[in-house]
Amino acid sequence: MTVDKFQYHDYYMIDDLLTEEHKLIRQTVRDTLKKELSPVINDYAQRAEFPNQCIKIFGDLGAFGPTIPTEYGGAGLDDISYGIMMQEIERVDSGLRSTASVQGSLVMYPIYKFGTEEQKRKFLPKLAKGEMVGCFGLTEPNHGSNPSGMETNFKDMGDHYLLNGAKMWISNSPIADVAVVWAKNEAGEIRGLLVERGMEGFSTPETHNKWSLRASITGELVFNNVKVPKENLFPDIKGLKGPLTCLSSARYGIAWGAIGAALDCYDTALRYTKEREQFGKPIAGFQLTQKKLAEMITEITKAQLLVWRLGVLKNEGRATPAQISMAKRNSCDMALFVARTARQMLGGMGITGEYPIMRHMMNLETVLTYEGTHDIHLLITGMDVTGMDAFR
Image (cartoon, rainbow, N blue to C red; front, side):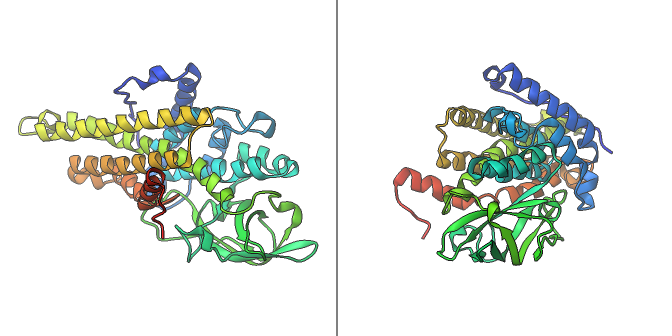
């Protein structure tokens, strides 16, 4: 077990822009995670094992769907609060943040946004408390950045739907009680269905041998003539608008979350270089070390300002998917730069489990490419500023 010595860094005093509630939420989440998960997360990652206790911890903290109204079990908080929670969780581990953001943004959000009242009452309160776990099925073996080409499909059999196909790279799937699945109907329209654990023909094999997100549980969704009750269909949403709306919510959480990983790497490097002596003085006193530290905190500060402004826009209902894409790409790229720089500064110690940097670095390689790759988000920004689609 390790001791979490993390100290927060706010070079531009952005805390002045937060409410007292925001800061209280942040401190509550940080204190809990420092006690419950930080000391053990490296051991779980080394063993490639998922810390199941995080489900109850997140449920108790209100980190599952915190923006969902209280009548459905959520905390009824604003989007900046959600972002702060994701930042604190990813500061511990990106895999843990994946668990929380999938549950909140990709499962609870679409049920709340697109589901029937019966679906909301049945699933949301239990998902919010962590009594149920959910996952999101969009990516397929042959279709990642091009979800419109999905092959998973369902047919109307009169009193039920018959679902066939497969999804892969699905966070939470091996432990999920319910999956939000996007599939094409006989007319070729993309629709959303709720597939529940125990339905015959539905299986969730786990994905092994990952070098990244090792403390996250990942798997597939396999549908072999699964009978899905008609009441499990989202009634009105059609086309890619459904899943892409969910992805915008998840990408927003990642934009905040990746900064948490960067802050942890920066804090580790700053403390290490102040203590590590070479040539008769701490290496923090050398020019090249200070150059690295200055560049790291500058990039972190720019990202902090970007996501704060994005949070304000999201609270006001004015944040666009393209703005969210820019923030997601920037935060992930920045965090990977900070992690790689910090790893160099620690030398050989940077690759050991005694410090979190190499784990963050490996995790961020995945965060850079999931929920839309680095290049795809560049093209989204390019299309937004030019009005021209360069995807094809």
